[in-house]
Image (cartoon, rainbow, N blue to C red; front, side):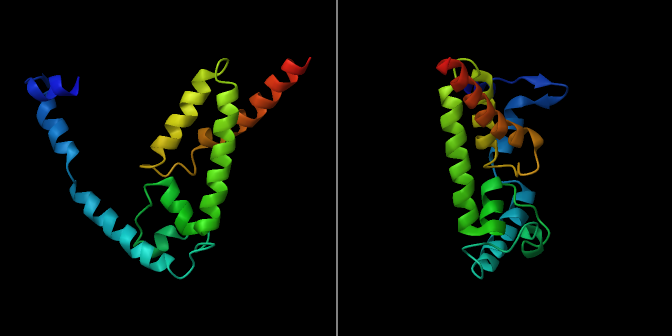
Length: 149
């Protein structure tokens, strides 16, 4: 599909799709500031690698720029320990969702998609991420109870 878009001259509402996609594939002007802020933050992280610099302090060390990655934010604010705890919660939830995937495939897909999206977007304050974590545990426990009866 992308090859087709790149090779054809399709224009929608005055926007050439081929040129639009080609321009979006490269670095944007705002990316340079974000990468520089992440570099500045990583230097500040050297002071507290195990437990981070504390919740909500990412932007203080990164020149006011947001993390744009849930995992990078957790690493900075809560350190290696916090990242391990988050990884543990994610693994448990993925295992639980895998067990109930036949009945709740849409939740498994939504959770997996949100985790992938979290690489590029800070989803820490997204309510549905935490609701999906809860569903992963609650629904797995409820299906276990039905299987035992």
